[in-house]
Length: 85
Image (cartoon, rainbow, N blue to C red; front, side, top):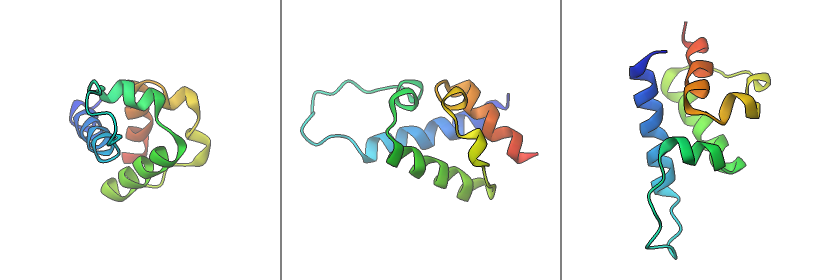
């Protein structure tokens, strides 16, 4: 796996999570990118996929956007990486 790609995707996930923090939960414990990806809702997931596709000029096939490919960060990064070859 490409560590640079992993770091970039991790940053994108962190930025997405920070931009959608609940204003009411000031004491919220900061989640890791892995935790956020595990529990991401469908709207934010679409935002993430769109951002990744735009940044890397790729189009991820819907058949790859299944839970098995998205519940762990390393698996998700590997799935994205296959479109960058």
